[in-house]
Length: 167
Image (cartoon, rainbow, N blue to C red; front, side, top):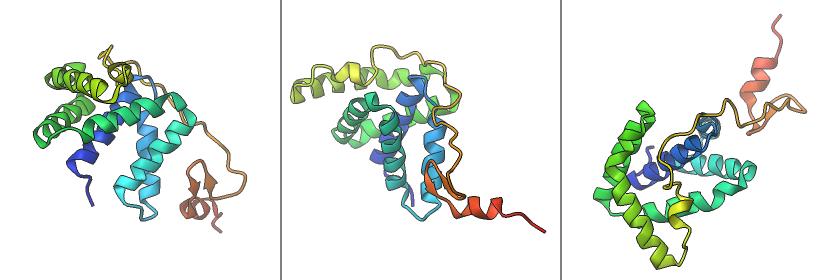
């Protein structure tokens, strides 16, 4: 199952915001992959992975909610533009790839601020600075599980099988 265009824009936008703030977005994708390996649909897996990230970095709760509101209020052609620009940016890491959508995002964020009364809407989306910050090496702490198979993302039977010594 694939993400809808709207959900893909939310996920890619969130991962870009997180990466640009200096956090490891790959760790979030890894958590989502672990969750998907249990049969969880991709949309729900990314929601849970982002929720886990927000538990560790609560300052991201409002910006991610604002991003979701902005994407939900966007029409299909705008979503297509977001997805193309975000995909290119994810591939290249070059902020120039975001330039085609910045005017639209800035305008739409201003409209959302006026509509919702949230004066910090544009700042909360990280629009003040479009240059990417360096990516942190790791934001998910390496935790030694208290018991085999239990890690930061929950129980994983694969870990038990991998930890079993062979004769």
